Length: 150
Image 1: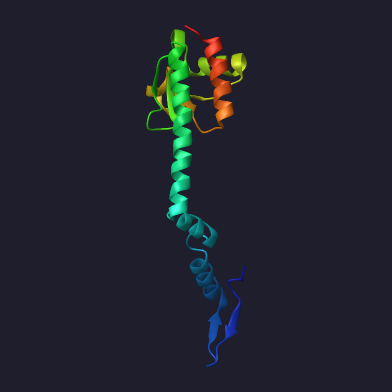
Image 2: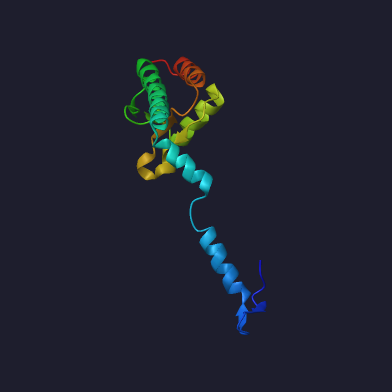
């Protein structure tokens, strides 16, 4: 960083505050998205990038479908997961969202998000995410459905 009191002499003999010039350079140079991020964003819009994005979206939506189907077959009430990677589970037996979190964590070693973290209207619900490997999703569903079979 350049000290605010540092000056130099311009060609015409006038004093120039170097900090102002340095600050303008820094502000201009670093005011925006880095080059590597710009190139990554550009790649997303290429034909190959669009195909990769669609493949990834399809993969996670298939994971959500597995979660929906497995939990529904186990008699667990749920919502979502059709056009989004999140499945909302109605907590069973009147459990609070945090009680259900503890039950899943300690009973089957699966973690999700208590609905109360999304505000008062989320209480009584629990969010599961499809953002994981297929193997982990299938394993988690086996563990949950074994524990909570209707």
